[in-house]
Image 1 (cartoon, rainbow, N blue to C red):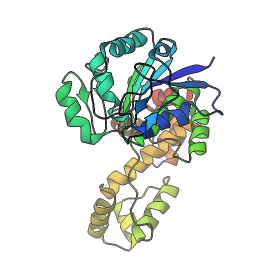
Image 2: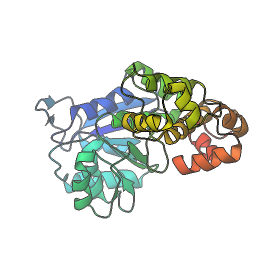
Image 3: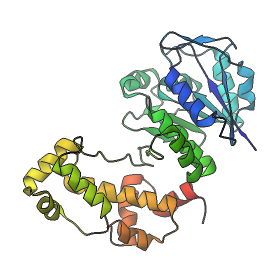
Image 4: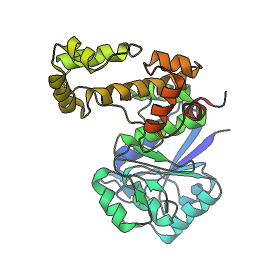
Length: 313
């Protein structure tokens, strides 16, 4: 059965956020989804950059939606009581309600985020926190998913959240296919306790640190330490530490562990390898070590993560 996605475009809608949802859910090749744009009164609305969004439907379509997406908008005015009630009613029927960027300013007054963590563009996080103190505003993540309520940070993070939802609905293969069509990374994880954001890579690809990190990622199964990394980079351990902090914001060991966890996440998503094999391939050693670091970084166990992204085994 086709999954109906309806985007609610509010006055001042951020066109990029709206087009993000349209590209993921509304492309003609994506038969799994139907996509429609509605406004609060069925009339065209201005975008945040001045042009008009036309060809829209009326809010009655919200009643048939399986997922409602609220793109960012500016200024952050509170939607009408009718719109807020329509969102609450949809959620009570089991509809998934999702905000992208500052769309959280329309989702928060419904009360659906009360007592939950949520995110928005980092520049608007304090405004959201002040306006809705019952919401646990978490600005330093890409997205947060609470099953039937989800929110993303600004701009490209909306793509990450939409692809994450596709991955939840239809698996990694479908999400990866859409990502390839859009020429974006297939999985940039969300943050918060549930997901791990990708570790930074060196900014200057021509330097020796970039060469070192490329080698490390290709040889994660090897038990390397800081001394090994320093020798390979022809640097002292102190020089290596300074370079890593300057280029990635992390110490060498923090960065290395982050890469091992990211590699484990990928293997859990895409293979049926046992945990011991994954621990060996990623240099984490044993299944128990893998579980400990995975729980600390991702906030869930490897087995639970595998079920989330690959379905029950």
